[in-house]
Length: 483
Ligand code: ADQ
Image (cartoon, rainbow, N blue to C red; front, side, top):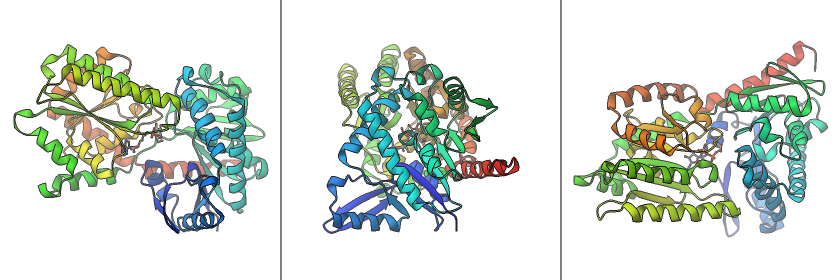
């Protein structure tokens, strides 16, 4: 029986090691949830890194890990610490991540990390080929594995390969600056179908392909190496029912069942102390525009002092890539900004910013989504931004206002949100005021339209649409006898 092989840098599992046993707990992240409809039954496997380096595993624990992964139809790619450094922290996160998000000043190209990126992609390819059988389809995910489609194609010319990029694809003028630009494009073009979140990313990719490689492009088909590669956009959705149902359950809860965070929020929302909550949630990453958001919020309080004591920014940042120097610098900058703004405006009964630097369990996310009158998401660049969708899905009463950066993929589908330029503090300040004063009927009208769309284009539909289009590429090839 043929199967689908899903490949991503990390497996959708967390490994817990207790003395002599290892348990693999499935992750609940967007990608893992979205792929549920593809990665289920016995007709799929997932290939990726387990998160443990070879140095952390002896031969006994290696077998335990392998068996634990097998139970979840996962196959591990083993990596050394040096490989993780060069491939993940080095080339993926010091070159590709900043460049693809237009942070050229943070981009550093080093020969050594590029070499490790190539050899680790080859390691992934070898594991895939070892597990590949006649009739299998392959779905490769994200910027860490740009070379993988071509590496697999070289060994298995007839296999069906799909590739999806979760981050933006930059414009030609930015992409052309990377020394290994031909190799990266050719790597991706090993696929039969290349998917992006938005039409803009798709266009940027096609234009780079045409101008750098000189290939013929017919609508969204690239003619390459005697093959046709289809390029299309597939905006990723969320598990809408999961968020909506959890929010409904949250609203039905008795007082004594409430989480500590919710009890704390309730305390601050009662009596004469009621301040509306403006929520932001992201990984602590320079692409997310966290410093801009803080400065814009400061500007808002300066410009509209009538909101002092009446509005509060609740800012949740998840620690991320803390071994990369830019992330440490950003963390310090944000700590200082929060301290300075709180010092400047705080009153005995009101602090303008509540800042949490940690990951939170799902039920606390729901507490925050359901308790906040406004969500303020200001990325400088973001492939999609799932938080915007999760906030709207959690608004069971249909109230709440989403302020969303025009630099996110999500803004292309969520035109009922208040769309802002994350570099325009004046506009952000005015939009926060508008959001806090928006009549309830208007909030309900906007959110009704948004929810309808998010429910229909959920993550399962995203995965199914991609897989259907991938199957479609094979039908086209047969029709034109190219296979
Ligand atoms: P990310 O950059 O990680 O993803 P995003 O799409 O916002 O960004 O997803 C973050 C996820 O983490 C959300 O599901 C959110 O609920 C969760 N999360 C955030 N803060 C949390 C916290 N403190 N505690 C617990 N969970 C938290 C990349 C791209 C995006 C793209 C996605 C999917 O950068 O642009 O939308 O992949 O393709």
